[in-house]
Image (cartoon, rainbow over all chains, first blue to last red; front, side):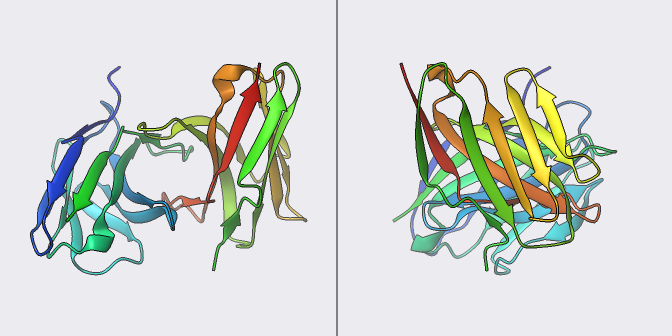
Length: 113
Length: 112
């Protein structure tokens, strides 16, 4: 089975721009979560989608948004980029059911200049 | 307020010996715990998990112990191998949520 894929792997943007990141979950996985990793804050939960509905949302400003499509693929969008948004953005998928294991993609490294 | 804490930023262990990584949590609602390993420039890789109804779970060289009364869990790696050198993250979730709360990680170095 193919793992979680994320595109693009690297991205450089300028302050004020917006960015869209994409995630394809493991086949059969219906839940997709997004995390931000920074050196200071570690791994922080952004949001989780299941069957095209946002089920959980972390403590991030409204500039961070996401969506999930009927094939479980997900995108996250960050508008009006700030320097502090520079981070590794990780997507994780899970099968749901009795286990809570999430399987992560390689991440998208976003640099805001 | 950190709900999941890994108080040791780094740990060095000789090859063949036991590595013990520790994790403490404060949120009583957490009922499922996971350990992930992360290499640079890669996403975290799931290692092992434990439900709060258990106090121990084993998978090969990896064993996780859970002490609910102390709100403490630990990951034991026996024997440690150089390929185990990575950053290890403890994570927790609860109440049917798929939101994982992570610790800041412990960098394990296994010395040949």
